Image (cartoon, rainbow, N blue to C red; front, side):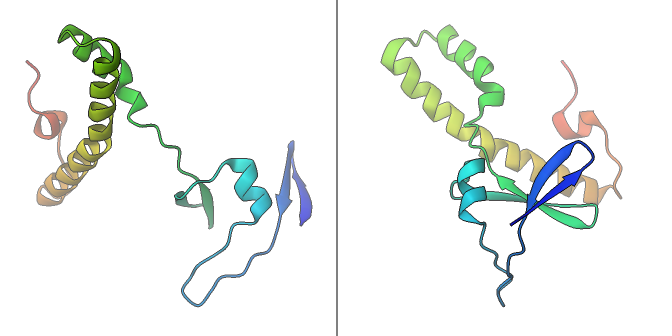
Length: 123
């Protein structure tokens, strides 16, 4: 490993091999330090690839809304917790479906659309 300093940032650099199947192995030190699990996010940027761990948010972006709705429905205690877990698991697939529908809509309109077409008119 080589230490590289760019501006104010100190980085470690390590050359790794790429297999015939285009696979790479993340060095154990990096894997542990960054908290990788069983998924990595791969981002193409500025002539390079950024690989970082996927954080399981469990739908945390919507946690307050989910909890408020469940409380309003009268759930509490262990039942509230169980319902919250169930609802949280549905967030990611729902967002993925919205993205797919938006992509299909945009492809059908030559790349032009508006919020009303994506989400429906505001009430």
